[in-house]
Length: 225
Image (cartoon, rainbow, N blue to C red; front, side, top):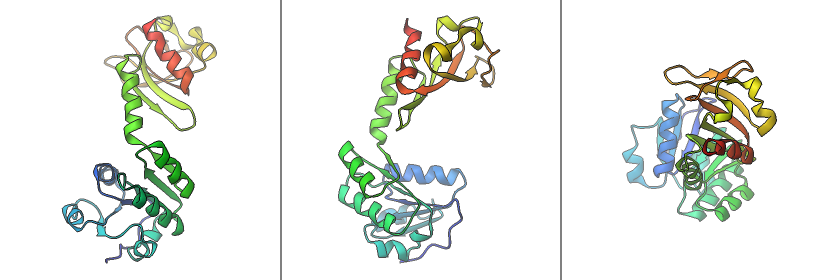
């Protein structure tokens, strides 16, 4: 079992090369990060041997096996194991035992997510659930894009409601009335601009807004009123 060279400070270990883990690892590589990709299946390791910085086969539920491949030298890890809940939980536990500062883990349901949090995962992702919520908001037509965070905070891209047309942000008082912050404005055929009090809103503009999830949702619903 080969040991990866000493990683850079921005290197990440990704464990589990299913669809989720592979997508994360590829995105990290595209962003310029070194990736130690780990999977217990030799055929998967062989398939991705030239895709990532280092690809090794190891039992990620075994703390000592992870230490032998140098996983303990990383500050951040992503666990992409989903269907095998026991392996997912034991892998997170092993990473925590190795002292890795930030552990991100995929969960397939709410119970799985709670277990991962209890054994030490810093960030738990439920990609199917998150994407489902995102699509639901966009299908209604109120939002063009939507991201919700764990602490009840959301960012959305929405069409400018009629109440804001041909007024500046200062004149509309959207923050005071609706409790949201307009971060930026995208006008058709023009570059995105950061919002200022004197920024004027046109009928065809799109707004980037943020705030408490319920307030963002209520504000975006104004496009249907």
